[in-house]
Image (tube, rainbow over all chains, first blue to last red; front, side, top):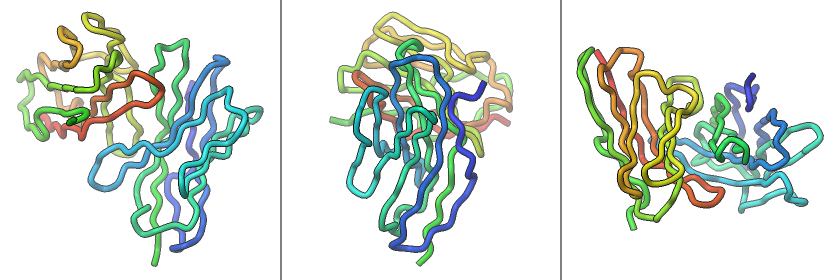
Length: 115
Length: 110
């Protein structure tokens, strides 16, 4: 069964607008973590934001925020005030304590920011 | 402090040839991982290690072997390369919750 589902293959967003990238996950482990990574065209994997399963508040890192809805098993990434440099592939990932903290990745969402 | 480095960055192999990819980290991390990324897909875990001298299978281990003789190094071997192993390979290491990725190795098997 797919652990991480990203249903949006590609999205376009206007510069300075906000964009929400969807991510749903599946786990029975009460201890897990959710991540978002950015992969620009250069290929490196850049860590953006982390949310632990026991964290009470949604994680935020600068222009990135994670909308964590535990009951719905959803961990959407919100990028505010989009910039041209935000054009990239974005991956949602999960690690579970019961699985040696291995990361399971979604298929990714390509974001293209238009001027 | 170089973080996670991978050698080589690019490689072309012929079917049946063997090679070893080297991953090195200078952060004294216990956990190390090898992933592959194919077009249109997220990263898939090949093998991983939870400490020096240990290795374990990930999601797609067939056709690969690994070794972790030293804490800072994690080697990925292809004994007999196949075109299906054409991919970008990423190494990562972690101690806490965050995984630090290397720059990737682009491997083409013809």
